[in-house]
Image (cartoon, rainbow, N blue to C red; front, top):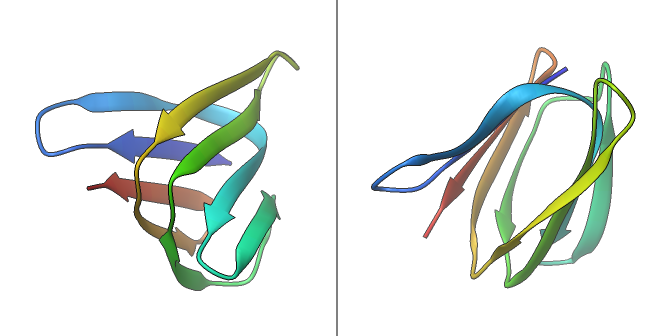
Length: 78
């Protein structure tokens, strides 16, 4: 699955991941391969993900939008 985290000025992260946990407006949620299509607003918090090699990483965000479709998780940061 591909994760893309972008802001108005830069690509924060782009790469293959095993799972992503996002701070949704209704609570945190985890996305795995073959997740149903979804669009969600994101609140301030941490995006946590496990990369293709199994390493855990995180990025702090102040909010944004997430679009999940066809094994691509696109996060646009405010």
